[in-house]
Figure: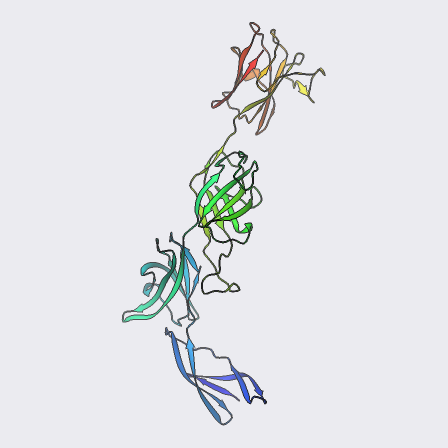
Length: 402
């Protein structure tokens, strides 16, 4: 039986291979339970016993370096970092300190398990961008018990630059944009500086107010690198009228950190840019779509169906700004409005003749279209008159009557 004495411990071999040609024996041991007790490394006197032979050798135990999660943090500070240290000690929060470039960080939590300690510290504000030294120390009344220094990355956070167009209707429709990546009626261009590297557009998330563009109500359409930033094209979700902030979050792994290789697991802090209340939703202005007159319809009943008056005749159709009506009145005028949100202020007037309340017969109403009809009252004289529709306390439409 082959045994090894390593420090104060004795271990049995778990594997043994011999090579007759090279006269070399390879003996494998599973060595565990070696405690560093806070030291960076320890040198152990060891030996292997094979039959009657004892072969002495030296064995150096080196402490694994501390691992930060995430591996970087914003210059804005305020976020937690968990440092996993392999000191073989039971650390206490009250006696553990963490500094970034000599600036003390608040240690919020220390968790010990199997002689491995997780130390959580809050990154201070205003550290210099680049790699800064972090020192973790565990102390006693007699002085430092153990310490470790590592390099930690501080990055300049992404910054919101602008959004074009900066407004849309409540249904997400925007004006044409010749400088945007995607010139659609529902797409905007968003400029972000200091953006991290991305592999594809799936690593970019855009949020309007509380609505995340996840390919349901809106989606990120494209993203192009420029200088130190990123130009993003995103569709616009519907939203109630008012101003909202924009949030752009980068979901990818980012560049490989210093000291890591691409195949290693690492976690970077999730980078994001948040704007102020820069994007404005508004209700589109109401507009007059059509006015159609039928001389023989009955009041209180729908006059026009399938594009024809109730007697089968063609209605007299107006333009978007004027219409022709008989001097004697009578008959039914059907009016179609778009983007009209009605309230108690609604009324129509033609040459000082007013229609409101029971004069208005509603035919159809939706979020974007309102169709109503009135029975015309007689006019005092012929000529050209100004008509006006008060849609609400905040909007009205003018038209001409001949």
